[in-house]
Image 1: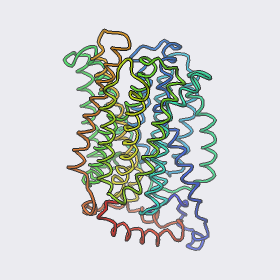
Image 2: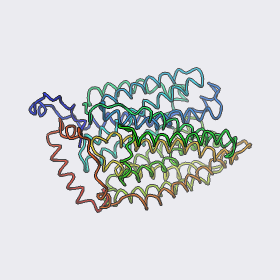
Image 3: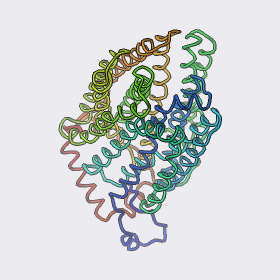
Length: 522
């Protein structure tokens, strides 16, 4: 496959010069890519435990507090496709460095914010940086490792680190908020990000697929505005109702903007999201599953953090410590996924992981105001986290299985976009569900009741997702029947240039092994 292994040489470079270029240390590539992804995912959840402190310090309203989360996730989701395509066209290493640099600067601005709007703006800028960085992290792995067990292990490690970042966010946020202040949940990214920037500059080698073309900025703006409008409309339904103009206008506006996005993508010469990709069953079905799972699973950490602090009266650091077992469970699930995929198939494992998570959601929906940690937090949290870890790797593997090298960054961005887009809209929807149950009531009993309804709703969403996977996900040899992805005319050079001298032979042998194991859905 196309590789981050070396920078494609110029037309004048001789084959001998190419062969003399050393292959990168694969462990260093994995470490740099996973460190970048860890920071990106960590900042989705790290602010959860710090939200009460942010509200009191900056005078944020309830809806304003929710936008501290959604400003990040919406720009993250909306610009991720643009970030993936930019990596393909302008270089994966370059976009990794640019995205991480913007992320670090925005983190500094957010940590120093003196007004609520400044914090929300900084979080939106963080989301843009993350949208450029995150697809580059996965593309670096999928273009460095040829198809086969090595790539599956690399993707499993990437998924585990990303999942661990999301899970560890509560613990990290709690420790920093208690020991220092809420500002350090953002400021901590500055020194860590600087170290990762330097390591990536040293260890990663440049590659790109295809010639430089104009980026589809109008498409990115349309999809981001459409998602933001939908999320705003969903939030407004809690106060204005589903028939109120204040909710209907942004909802319909969001639908129109997303329809305009599809129309633009169908007509532009260099679309942000080529609609031809969705003719591939593996891409379309896996991304729909990612979206639906994200809608339910993203909210887990948010509601559990509020439950522990506002209902069970935990301190921020106690709430953070309460997340540690879940963090370990989601990492365990992600690391178990690659060997389990070889035994039961990617499709079957994705379904089993989703059903495991749904069992945890229904268990969590029995939470009470006087609940204990073991039965109201630990038990259901372990099931939810383990199921999330088991389902993410097979879905990512299926979605990227048929992509041409020239579209590798785009498909990687699409995977993360689907999950994050679902998470942003799911947070808005399930927060509205919880608020509708709480109503005008106050106190731990009312809040526990609202959160319980949100988890019950999330459980049914996951049941629906599992049924959808059964009907649509390719499994076993069925996946090999997808129409082949169209190659970028420039991709051949990127695939075979400057890679490990043994990579092409390994890829051929890996492809043979995959075909032999096709019945297992690997």
